[in-house]
Length: 141
Image (spheres, rainbow, N blue to C red):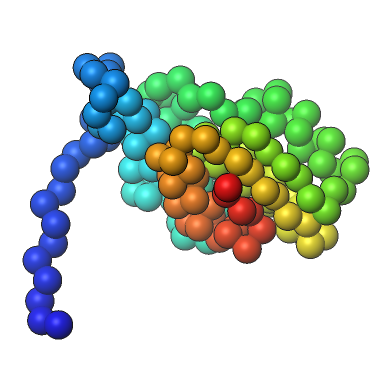
């Protein structure tokens, strides 16, 4: 195959307000920034570092629509109490909640199926789930 030159890198993760919603860079600037932060700082296979990276962006850089804080505690407690074998989530966004749920249900062989309408968000979530080492527990549809 020979040497393959690396692709020219386009920085799509600049934290800025959208200029036009017709461009991926403008419409998904927050989510792309989350992915960049997770890839740069999370440890592959360590879901807690993936969560920490997402929380870092959401708390210190831009608002993210993730179920953190008290909402996360409620979800964690319900899952712990009922120990479901299957969880169906509507609205994956960047995969934060689905990986939190998967971390618990994996202990008893459960699964999470999560649905996302936006193909860019679904792709970002799949990357986070894979990096967290939970792709055997979570399916993004």
